[in-house]
Length: 110
Image 1 (tube, rainbow, N blue to C red):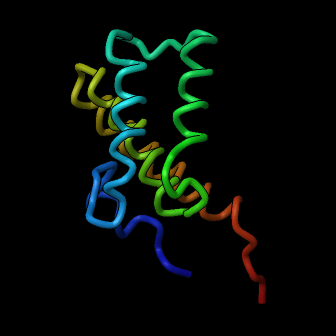
Image 2: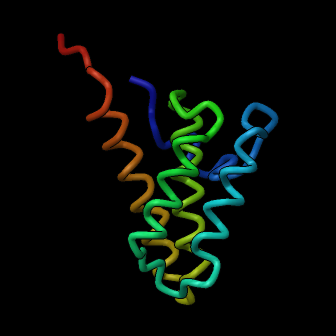
């Protein structure tokens, strides 16, 4: 099984040549939470987030979905002030990526 941790630091939540069309969605999501210090989500924010992601380019491709979730973690990281908390958040993202990889995809057992 391929390690899900190998690319966690490489292009983490960033646009690359392969996913540049996601820029519009990134901007929409950033604008939803730009004035929120604690990322508290109102029902209007949740609806706006769902709308942005439902129109996201390549939303059915795993790499694009991972990049979008990475971006949301980066938005949360930017709201944090404590460096230790930021490290914990990046560790949490690694754990979530491993869980997504294991739980959302069927795994063969031999």
